[in-house]
Length: 134
Image 1 (cartoon, rainbow, N blue to C red):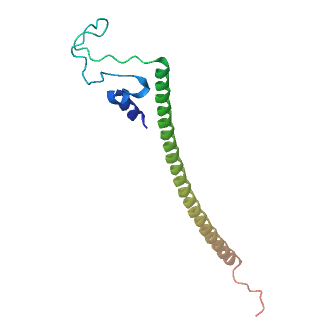
Image 2: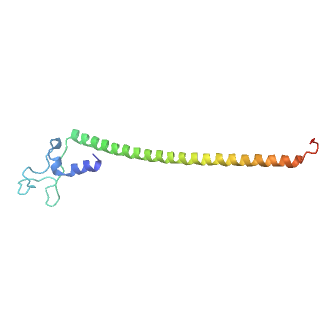
Image 3: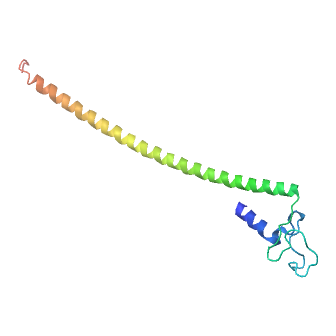
């Protein structure tokens, strides 16, 4: 359950009418039309419904549940970020391994080329051998 689902359920008077032994509204569906008395705060016309007073234990349980839901969602987002970061690092490792292999090939080619040039220089420097008996 996400926090949005929890809050939507909390705002729905039908859903909260039974939960936690809290009754919101009137059982017969009448919204207080024709009630006698009243007085006190919130009895003015057009002010909307008063919020049902909650038992402190119920309120604490609801806040704890909201906090648990938020924490669960935060942990899920953190896991998603971690997965994305790991995937990015793995892609970077693959790219660097390919680059390393390419650099090793280039180094080997250059070493071979240098050895050939060194061999040619030695042959040219020594020149043809006139002392050999043929």
